[in-house]
Length: 409
Image (cartoon, rainbow, N blue to C red; front, side, top):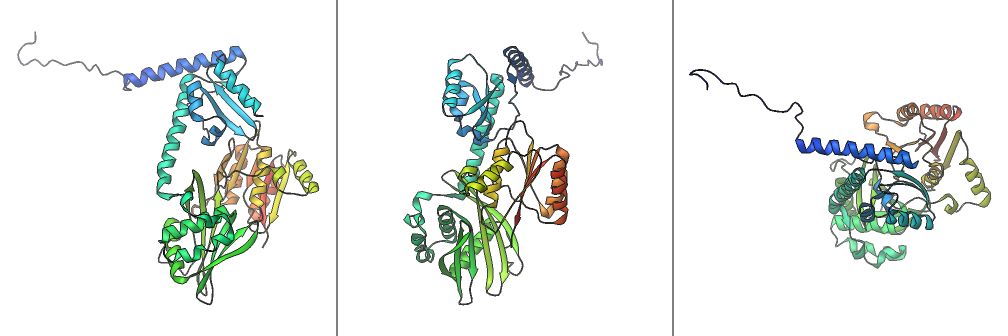
């Protein structure tokens, strides 16, 4: 019993580790699960992998859907062409064996690893949450392809759009022109004011310019204001060049649009480059090359060091060819890094970096940084200056494979 005026100090029973008990328990459980999975992998002669924080491209689940991966605890965590790296929790499961046999039956070359059930579920949940976030973000830019009408099936039908544009909102008009360009396989949309007060709309398809229709200055003004707004360009500036970017979504395909404006005698001219990141890139064999050229390119893809330079005018297929060759090099045994402006396709198993000229991150600086990352193969989107060219040549002479493009003017 305490005497009068005696202060009783109540002991601080707060644990030294302030992490909540539930979190500490989960952490300990995961450590034990990872340890057990590693021991099991060693005993079975399999590679062990912890997928808890392993970066997995959501696109790999085109090989095996997310629901199946979650239900049977088997995840494709790396895909390059027909090469697939799988992680599973139970190699003895009949379902695991069936999925492996099904994938092999489809021609996939499998490399298998063992992972804990906990890390597989964490990986699946992470991918699922990323997918939900992407869909939420895309809703405001969603374009319903089904409602666009038959005019998008052929250029001659697309020409009928000029009459509709007079009665459409700026957003509807831009959406229809953009999706029309996408459906015709255009790489670029060109808006060019003319001396007669009209604006010519042209698409670049397979490297060639095609005139689609002409529109009035009134319609054009509404469309370019919408373009500027979406691309975060200054609406009240029309006397200096500007650049910007935005995206729209058609049937779950995210289309990035790179916008460039240039002041001319008759008003601002706009060019929009369409980048379909989920459209996939063409296999080398499907590039349409002559047999001799195809053999030369295939032989070039077997080099262990040196430089491959793809040249040609705008829209001629330089980037498509480069990515096709890059996919040929792509292998888990190689460290591959790209430097692009912008990143046009996302490739699994490859580190991709995007330049930022406003912040001083140029091709020359980026390439020098990449070479400190111990790469086997480097792809630089474009050689634009002497410094980049010198660094690229030096890299090719010192044991690296260097791929790039040079644009003819």
